[in-house]
Length: 257
Image (cartoon, rainbow, N blue to C red):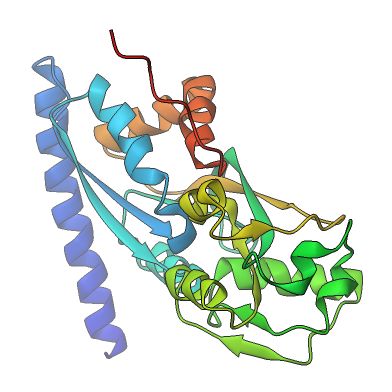
């Protein structure tokens, strides 16, 4: 795409965005918030974001969600192109003039299948994982970037690695016995709860990064985006309780009457 075409595309998005904002403002003045929240999220956030939006929608039932799930590199491009109202990501770039609100821990843990030798050892160090195949996400993944930076800091090096293109593929490869992996715990709820995968007791883990709600500093937020930002700011306790269901523990069913 030429520079002129890109400029025209940005201008068109801005015009349509303003018209949509005006429509939302008019509905807000009539007493009910209506419209669409355009939200882009890093792929590892997709497990809890629908539940987050469902809690928001209970307060604003006439708001709908347009959810885009991409890797970190694509999220950064979408921020540059002003494609979305808000973005949820980890490891926010510091050189793009962004405003961000950290609101939730993103715990990254090491997992292996139950019959893996590491599952039968005592407390582990990261170095204990080095002899085994490490399953990595694709370049551009936020989880991969976080892990690579952490490995460098801890002077850990894996000679055997395999690259897979999604958290689901990474998880399935671990289940199949192809190696060990570091994944966000939010992606492993069912497997950890049922024993399909084991969280390895690595001394230096979990690696905690924060999920952040992100926008460009100069961005004019729609009424719907303003309301969602206010919800995230004010409902920390509710959000933390909501995300506890992704901690990999089985919950007792409520007793029937």
